[in-house]
Length: 462
Image 1: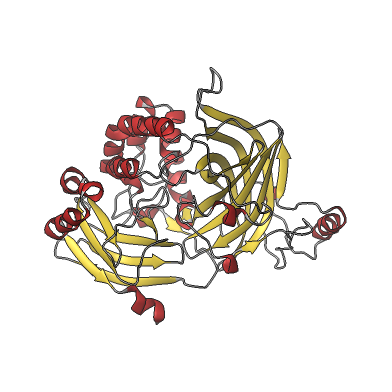
Image 2: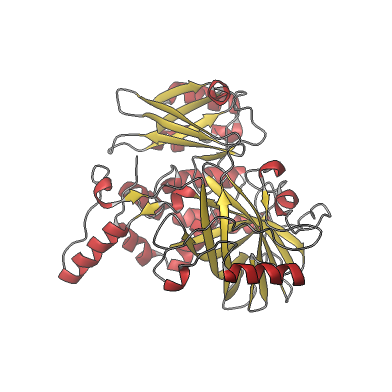
């Protein structure tokens, strides 16, 4: 099932809320606190499934507009009640070890060291040459088209410089800030990037979010990938913490479903309609394929990320202009890096089961760090799905998509999926997830429109 892009509803949101307010509220939806998580489930249903970020369903937008005020209030409260001094990470070098340093506070928990690709050598500080394969990044900017082979003249020069000066390839400096990509892990669902941000001036005291106590810096990015011919703009959350007053270490997660949508045909039709003074094309569930397509994300690809600004959310007001937000603009261009997906523990389980109402499960994607649920429903129906582990514990979202579920600490050898009517879940069922787990499970059994027990272990062993 795919969401529907309705620019009219986007305009309603922009009329009611500024771009800055909308971006801030949406970007903060990864705060993890049981109360906050529940409220976000209620109001930000647009992130409930693996669907194009640029395509929104009208009914969902209306719910978002209705709920933005309460979400902003909850997040504002969270910045106050959750603020505390972060516990410092284990005293190990940051270079190539960001995952290890923040795993105790990261939403998806621990990322396997064996599956992590470190871009730097911890002892010498020199970079690992990840550009052994020749790729060409194709984009609207002619300068983006470059041969990234390690045999190229430019690549050889950079390599020699790194060896001689212990330079850092995946690093850039601007406006008093140095940004370094230190390592990555690529699953079948997303890329996790270790990010180290160093500031010449001391960082402000960032707010501490949720039960795990992570801090947040958001990067506004322009991204280019070798499997697509256009750039992607993003607002990427970097979850981590201040290691000291001048150093922030965190993890940026890039979901493939945020970078594999090809909307060029729809955008071209919109430009044509605007030039002619005609109404914009209306996209429905049935016509989505006429306007949009998906790029295939290969097992190996090149990624080049440029960060255009950074901002964080602080415990106290930084100044009259920015309020409690830390902001810095610049141009941090990280050179292209080869990304290779891990093949360990990856599985896409084909379910394709629906009931008489057309409600059901399409697929379940599993990796060592997350489970992503893909559901289906008729166009006139709005649902919400819950996944319980083998012990009956609810899996919580680890990202801004409520169906991307963190599996750390859960036995997912068998899971139970319940799909409920959206309003009924929000009004009658969800409260018991916090107050009474047994009552919560009983309510799901009683109220669910669809239930499926999936023995994931059988699929993972096959």
